[in-house]
Amino acid sequence: MTDPETTDITYIEPITPNIIEKIIEKERPDALLPTMGGQTALNTALTLDKKGILKKFSVELIGANKKAIDRAEDRELFRECMLNIGLECPKSLLAHNLEGARKALKKIGTPLVIRPSYTLGGTGGGIANNRKEFERIVSKGLDASPTREVLIEESVAGWKEYEMEVVR
Image (cartoon, rainbow, N blue to C red; front, side, top):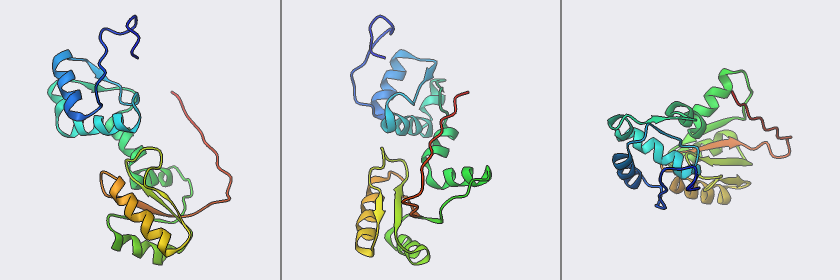
């Protein structure tokens, strides 16, 4: 995406909402492709949408719109999508603080998988086999999640994992 022969202009700048807003204001693009830039680009696109910047400059999200990003990144929305299409999911509860997480621990038991929302490649998450690990990982996960949200999920370690990608 930085090849001067295929682009009109290249910016070597941090991917932050403020920087991208200035670029949008200057360049007036028709669209923004938030899937090029990893978690940082996805989070930045959501922030730009939330602040009304995309609407203000008539910039369309392409490749993945806000609804699709939210469904993939918000742990509870993702779980609801899976249940709506008939997929069985591990037992889980959402927590926004350590007290809520402890309730999930009591209800589900260990081992548990802690999955922070809107984080890069599992940042802040992990598998807890006991209460000490659980509290450490949950605290780290809450700090890592920009929404201070973690999904506390029954561990299915040892099961076979299948991954599927669909392109339309």
